[in-house]
Picture 1 (cartoon, rainbow, N blue to C red):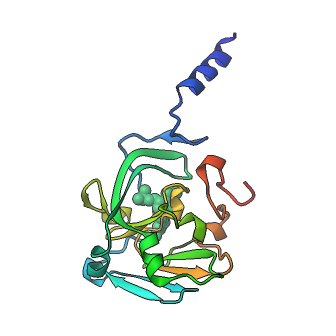
Picture 2: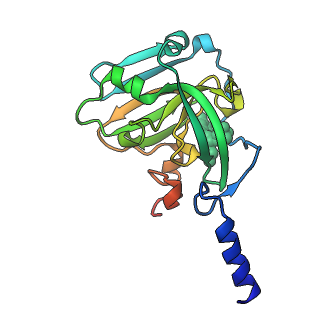
Length: 202
Ligand SMILES: Nc1nc2c(c(=O)[nH]1)N[C@H]1C(S)=C(S)[C@@H](COP(=O)(O)O)O[C@H]1N2
Ligand SMILES: [Mo]
C-alpha cells in the first residue's frame, strides 16, 4: 500500500471512538467562545424560569435550585468549531427535575433557551428530557467560571456546544421550533455532532 493511504488508515484505527467525525481532542484546554460581552451575575440575583407551554410556570432562585436533587454529568463536550473535550465533570440539576415541576403541556415539542444576555438557542424537547440535559453551576468540583457561563449555564452535551447556553435564565416551551441566535445565522436546528449537523442543510 502507498504511504499516504496506509497513514490515513492507521490514523483511523487509532482514532478515539469518543471523537465524532471532523473533531479533534483539545486536551486539557477549554476554549472560551462568547458572542456577547461577559455578564457579571451575582448568584443571589440569578434565577431560572420555565414558562411557555407548561401547566405550572415556575421560577427558582439560586437557593431554591440548590435544594433540588443534585445531578452530575461526566463525559465529552463538542464544539462546532471542531474541538472536543473529554472527561468533563459538571454538576447542577437535571432538566427533567425542572420540567417535571413545570409540567409541559401535550403540545409542547420544543424549548427556547434564553440567557440573561439575550443569547438564545432552540432545542427539541426530546433532546432535553430523559437525563440528557442539565443546568450546571459546578465544573470539576469548583464554581463554574464566569467566562464559561457562571453562575449557571445550560448543558446539553450530546449536541454541539452552542446549544449549551451560558448564563441561562429562561427555558420557554413552545409548540413550534423557533430558531435561536446561531440557528438564525445558519447553524443547524438540532446540531448532532455524530451526524455533523453543523449548518442548515447538513
Ligand atoms: N450566552 C452564550 N452562550 C453560549 C455562547 C455564547 O456566545 N453566548 N456560545 C456557545 C458556543 S458556540 C459554544 S462552543 C459554547 C462555548 O462554551 P465555553 O466558552 O464554556 O467553551 O457556549 C455556547 N453558549
Ligand atoms: Mo461553538
